[in-house]
Image (cartoon, rainbow, N blue to C red):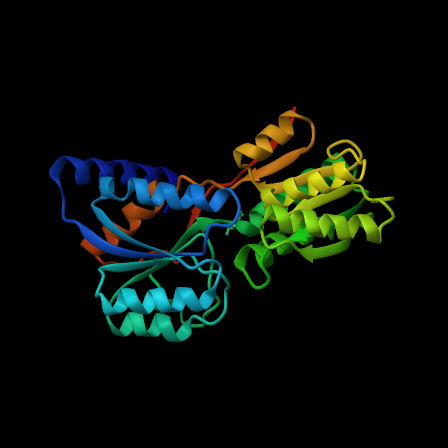
Length: 304
Ligand code: AHR
């Protein structure tokens, strides 16, 4: 489905839902948690926009735990909701619960993150950004900025999560083309500011104050914001001594970019209800086969 068709469908669907007071669908949404700045913005957008699309949203925050998500999805099945939306914490471990939803004839829609299941008929579609592309955009910007010569420290996201796998994969695919570019330190900072700070403190120790390090790549902005704090506390100049590139483009990284502490961020849109609800309600109105992945665009933003 093209973006133009998707947006046209979104506008039309919102209009019809509001004007005609179309049927209300009860939809369960199992959200990862509330880590960082991006995810709460995404949750708010889904909650605030639900009524405009004729959706009665049952929202469950899994606090970063897959067990909580499995419990929530099973509760939605027991409530016989019309559809289930899942933003999966990690990619593995979904077959059984997805099969249970399928047996109950409740369609499942993946949003944001992916699952790794052999049987793709277990879900209707995934509606999300392309995390691999985000990693490639970050890597391409860094290759250009560093003249393809750069020793990099990397702050990874939650181990086993789609963004950790896909952003790393995309970034490495680009820098792997240049012999002068390599990741010399990598650790998970769990998508949080505190995690990023802790990981950067470890990198600073391990590399004698980031000696010879040209860039920090963080899988999200919050970890980068924590890294900036750690670097400043160590007397370093993030954005000048070390190139800082990350993903999300949340307001706090925009401020850091304006202050010269960060150099680039790939935008992960948080106002995505307009992409998600029309697909879900459209499917409930007319359940026809969907493409297995509906991609939301990502853009690179660079500091002036
Ligand atoms: O799955 C998307 C990632 O999850 C975002 O980049 C990060 O901020 C969030 O926690």
